[in-house]
Length: 423
Ligand code: 9WN
Image 1 (cartoon, rainbow, N blue to C red):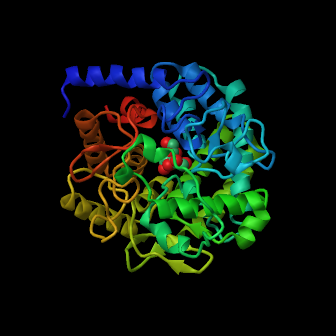
Image 2: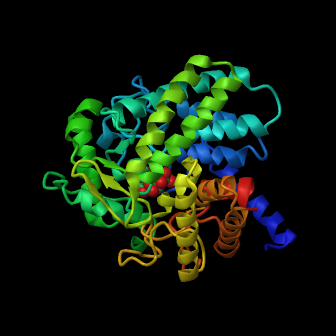
């Protein structure tokens, strides 16, 4: 447990970080490394802002949704202002949008955040929330149409960045089918700002850029992408987050008297509920990544596997399997929840998504555990998260082995998760 004095200091520091990262209407994930608006960062950050400024929290979501494409997609980065320090910038993506954006999306946590805000903040939110629900409905419909055109009940990602978990070992095999011969040379900016050992490697970036080139060449046409993108993968985190978001959208639509939205979201939710089972692995006793293009499962567990509880509801036998594996991981390392199986040879405790702990993933996992009655495990994860922040500050992520912080400093979603949940 953290003592009250330290808690109060961390509260102040967290609010200070969120205010310092505020660009008037949106919040950057961290200065320097990520100088624009990122999709799921912004939504999750709104939860923290809401603890001291309700109006500003709503603005965060409004600003993000204002960059929605005509086809319904809400992009993963919005380049609201010119800034040289990030690669790849608007010139690489060539999305043709105003404001310029990337050409892909990110995990749709926004509906869940809107529901949390609407239920926790005082007042009648109808006028503010209704336009958001229309935008969220269009975005979720885009997932169904563009990322699951065959209606099999799982949505695909076309780029590792779309998952938000950039260099997860799960992508290694699917990326091996991506031709990088036309990528050419480029200058990475991230490794000028943070230690190379904490970032994806150059060969990962070659593949990331090959996929950006693919999307750019077909002008981000969703049909071409679904039919021919060499990277086309279904993974449990994206699918669980979308399931959760659809459930929350149904609840919001009923609350705010939007029956058509409730009907569409209910139908999409039923499809996702059935489809999720395709990601189950008997071998791993958990949900795993499925390479849809090559019909091949990766039988390794990741922190995304536990999100089935957040996407939920989960059946008893599978839930029990999750609890026992989670505790087995916990005995192996010092802080939950590592982003990748600490028993696997590919585990790397400090290299980004190949092992480190992320506060906002912890919040989602803990939420799912609590909703399944495992308040003890939820509390363990909250305590681990608080201990990591108290030890290493508001870093982008943390080593599950040593508790050392990695990546960017003064990170918005870590500060937000502290204020909203872990403190
Ligand atoms: C690419 C901003 C983003 C997060 C992602 C995280 C990282 C970007 C990058 O940073 O990705 O989108 O350049 O590494 O993996 O989850 O949204 O914090």
